[in-house]
Image (cartoon, rainbow, N blue to C red; front, side):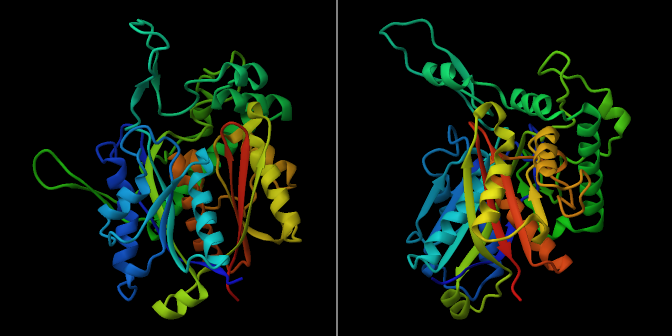
Length: 401
């Protein structure tokens, strides 16, 4: 089988919920990094692009009806180029890259664009149809995040803990203290701010032009979510998800808007279009766990991935772990034998600081991992995320020799 290579990556800044990107339609947001990659690679005959694969977790509003196809058209790709949207909730963006890599490795594609998008600000309210004619019991659901239209049998068998409640479950079962969670969150914020000030995050980002009602558009060029906080400020935050709990808004990831895309190519396409391979997609593993402790999903997925490729955690120079919550991130890294402040883990900050636009996060991790491998000279990187309803996903990348 041919190898699948990441050749380039771009992402939008990540905006806060109701923040600077809230006025941008989801399909328009997804088109931004696609358009940037098209502009960078003018030697490519884009008629030869085999597919566009984007992850998206919501798909209840402007991101419905195959947002990948709509974004591809909005980005200016030829109508002959198809598009498909995949949904593995928080792992969607990484799964989109894995889907592209598998198509290339098995010879069904040579050149792909893959990534993800989520506008959590623009997630609509929805209600289902009535069970009986003329019913007056319509239930309204907010689609921003979490359960809706729950199957009673699933609730009976597994429960329907909210995402923060699953983080509280992990903290309780693994003895993750509030102080350690806050310290992890503070490090994430400090690392992200340092990377932002040094221009390292800017290397990933393409600006978004946000239309204004009057006058020129606003140009958004950097992530909106990082905050220059302190341990004292984090310690004062309430724990609204459980009495006597430890999970707060400060040691959890944000609710955000953003999009990311990567150019994935096989050997023949690299030669034909004059591309430079930056990292090989070695493999991907997914795993299922109990939904009530969904944050432990990366542990199962990473262990499966390492065993499949005969590697140990010491072989991994870069670990980009999505920080859904500090409690689950610490439970995973400690079980892998890593210290809480491991320099290999989220060296430029993670989702607690940068934000977590669900469908885009996995693609952001892959782009960051490639950049960090190049900067640090390491060989292997792993990107991994926990996933709602109890799953984990992990991808192994290798820097070319």
